[in-house]
Image (cartoon, rainbow, N blue to C red):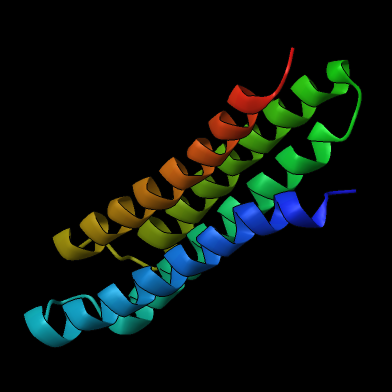
Length: 131
């Protein structure tokens, strides 16, 4: 089971980052008036935040297991994140036909932001772990 303290330290910043992304997206739409809609920003932020949340949950669950299983859980978390993002990219660009420059840039900015956060959490926990 994931400890409340460790989960809170990882999930609260993710929630704050999600709210910050939504607020900055809202302000971006108000000020710049781009061709991308606020609904697209909300969808992208929500999906990438959920993927990061799933990744962190799987990783933290693995940290409670014995050492040989921890590596497997870490690999599963990162691999699942990669697969979910590939599937979402295919759905976003091919099925939804969101191929304008603004949409592609917003996709990759949000992808990189939340991927860097998930990697930062994983590296921080692994760095503090005693071998």
